[in-house]
Length: 270
Image (cartoon, rainbow, N blue to C red; front, side, top):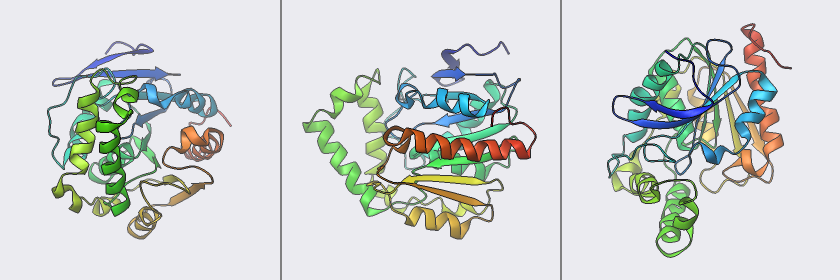
């Protein structure tokens, strides 16, 4: 496989996925693989990947899932199992395509759920830990209310215009996420069983004022996991602490990652 460029597209059998690669490549250092939220993409991480690469010495690989950013579109409607398909299918293909050797999965919101499913379904010795920002392990009423409010904002407000800055097909991005979450069948979605099968340390980062999920998500992880679960609650932050409190979030995430990499003799930064 040729070395990854700083930015480009991964050509998978069924998808063409936009990506960015910051810092050393997977053959040279551990890699942090970043999984965005339900309406996110590569660009919406801002400079958080650069901050993490600088603070840890690891490489950072971020990509836009199908339907997001400049990646290929996804067939609609998405089924309620779309995050399982992403975790056990596409993510597995991506790790192979980039030559992933060792590192961590870092996910935000839907991306955190995908990371959880992967680690709880596939015993991959290359994955040394998980960073889960505002994760969803089961569906709460508050999450469904936020999804319903987002639909109103998309149909009647300026949300579509805002998303068009980041996604070449904002309808595909929005309805792929929103339609799945508001599907009545999604109400019973629950990945807490996967938590019991995770065998690596976890850091959960959640804003104290997160309107998309409550601390019941954290309680579920602490109750179900046999692995260590560290928690950072970020004061004054809502659902996107890496944008709302970037320094606090970066410091917490970098400290966790560096501790894990030192355990494995791989840390390159303090």
